[in-house]
Structure formats: structure tokens, C-alpha cells
Amino acid sequence: MSLPTPSPAVAFVALGSNLGDSQRVLREAMQQLQAISRQPLVKSSLWQTSPVDCPPGSPLFVNAVVALVPGVGETPESLLAQLQAMEKEFGRRPKKVLNEPRPLDLDLIAFGREAWNTLELTLPHPRAHLRRFVLQPLSEIAPKLIMPGQTQTIAELLEHLPANETLVRLAT
Image (cartoon, helix red, strand yellow):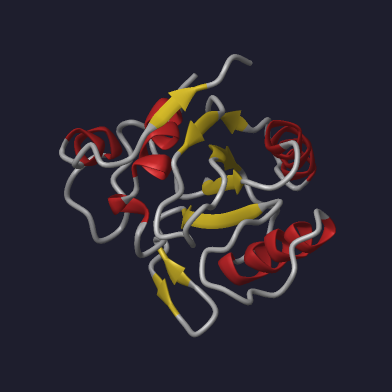
């Protein structure tokens, strides 16, 4: 299912997990994200992906992307705070090593057409357009989305990425 057009009221969140039962973790996280969305989530498939920029020997990830409609008065920073609280609830601990294995990683990819650059948050996510593990699931739900600062759609960005990441769609 894909969104008909990008909307200023839609936030895109990338989900990832590579510790524990990652498929179960992402499904449970999606249920919790539904609770903070004013409309039904639009969800990508689950994808098994190779670790990118992770410590040697890191397990494979399961990734997905959802689109949600934030609550009235929600800001990118307040949504980020909710995502970080959810990560902790699922057992995420403060980072000791960059991109270390984790039970749940939630990244705010875009919040409508907002462009932010603060100490806590950069929108759109500064590396989303370079990561197949974000663009592949995002292209399922918003292939025509053009993120702020970009001139190409998600589908076009994906088409031009080098094939240096391995992704496998998982049965649902």
C-alpha cells in the first residue's frame, strides 16, 4: 500500500532491530506507533538487511518504515522524544559503540515538509537518502515522496543507489 501523495501531516519513521526476535520487536513497535498516530499506520514490508557501518560481526537487521499522522500540536522534537522513550522501553541502552547491535532503533526520517537542524534532530534524516535499508521499505509506502532538500523521489533515489547492501523481503 502506498500513500497517494506526500502530506505535510505525515511523519515517516524507520524501524530497525538486530538483537532478539527482531521481527516480533518490529511488529510490537508498530502497534505502539499506531497508538500515537491519528490515522491507521501505513507500513512497509519487513526486510532482512546487512549491517551498514556497524562493528564487525554485527547480526543482520530487520528493517521497516511506517508513515503516521502525528497528534495535534505534535512537533518533530516531541515525536522524537516519544520514539526514544519507546526504544528504551524495548531495552535499548545508551550507546557504547557507534551503530552497535540493538533491540530497537527508531529514526525519524521526515516530518511533513519540515527541515530541522538542531543538536537533537536533523530533518530530513541526513543519511536516509543514502541507505537502501531505509529507501527500499520507504519506496513501498511513499515512492513519490520528495524529501526536503532533495530533487528526486524516493523511487528515483533508490534506483540510483549502488547495490552494496543486501536486502531480502521477509514473509509476513
